[in-house]
Length: 200
Image (tube, rainbow, N blue to C red; front, side, top):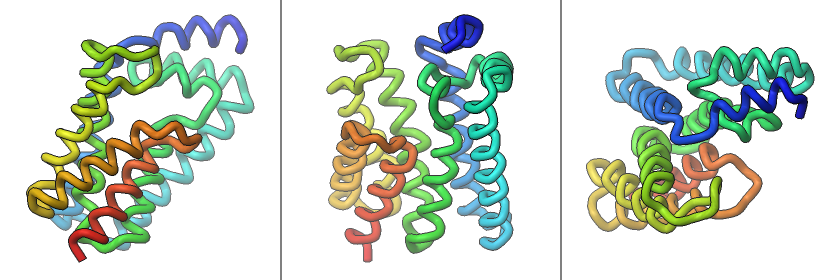
């Protein structure tokens, strides 16, 4: 990593409150669009597809061009994460995860699956960083417990207590699992699978 980019990346370390707010707001906004049926399913699918294509193209270009990567970290200094210096942005995976849920799974699981990603992840991250005990960048037990609790509350209105607890547990396990896939995808898919099986 070149020194100029490293300096910009260092500025993104820490709690990143605006990143958490935008993460939650995007998921809540998408869930609202689905719930209120503001956009037809086809229009929503096309919009998500366009966002994914734009995000992927942007990531591919900036990771090949150091000048564009530096510009990315300058423009999005309050939203970027250090890991995105060498990898696709989490926001790209966020949209891919949401689109995959909407493409593969029944509509009854879309909103709770998206809410789990939108709300449980930032709540767990904040609590884990402030009060958890773990190595930097690793999930803490407190963070995982908060993730489970918030995920359970997100699912509860849609599936009842029993399924909500189970979905919360499997989603928290997916978030904590050391697999080389962004958790914005794995959590969304695991939550959708569990919800589909438990509420069918």
